[in-house]
Length: 400
Image (tube, rainbow, N blue to C red; front, side, top):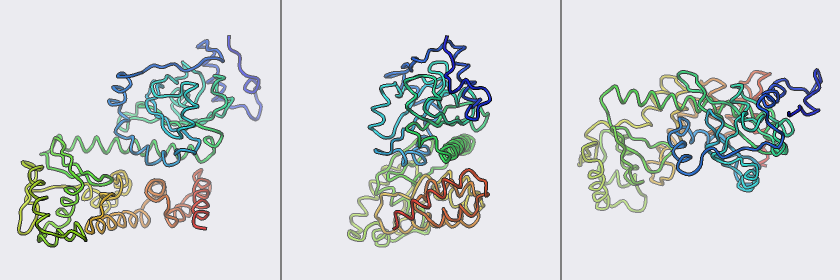
């Protein structure tokens, strides 16, 4: 029978952590041994199918925006997302660390539940339904004891059931005090994103389907009217400009907004012919002037409407990134700057500290003014203050 390690078996010691001791006790009841290791629960098509149908899959871009920038090559950090059963579905981050982690089967498809490997951040977070950090020899399995990890469960935004877990694994730095608040903010952002997506789908299903254009955070926009039509970059730029100018644009005006170098109306006419063909039966585009003859709602319209109503939290959830970020079209660049500026102004002037933290962590990582305002707005005992101060110091070093 497995016995508790001497470090954990000192009742009443200052270092003892009841939550870890309880996890080790559960491992004992499962008759696990210290040389236990993870096992592959999903491979090949089964893993692909589980990934594609998992409820967290639509929110992966949120996790990527919030966490993967800090888990690049050389960071010494891995980001893992698992299901409610403790099976890892996605593992990304530092490639050299990822190769090392394969030796203990910390890979997509592996079972890291408590019932399989004992105490670990992803498995224990699911077992106790609470965020947790596990440092080195707090792990039950000996093979994992050189590592540290922090994890937080993710819940269904409607009925509260467990959907899965988000984990950060690496060295001792991943159990620093600022890591859990970052993970908790990520989980909250994921839950909000899932709710927004569900509400959007429900609205489309219960009302007449009006075509919509998604153009925030993407270079190839998507027009949806019950089915999706992916557009080229140029067609996305044209539609964005036409939605911003409902009164219509003369051929020369639209051509100049699309390119500083090739403002030929002849070239534009050829593109408009292809665009009309791509949107046949969905959106009508008229000429002389060019304008949309049927309604087309954009995610920019929704974002600005939410900001006007003061719904900053939902607006931030809807802001997937800059307007057509890869576009160099002068008219789109100007609109992109205006949209980003309106969002920033609204968040900095009227949003709560929590929403400001989400904004700074995602779209304002280099915005020193946003981080300074966040520091001023946080309560003196907020656990996030240390992370904010550290980020400001990093910004100052980068500017030096």
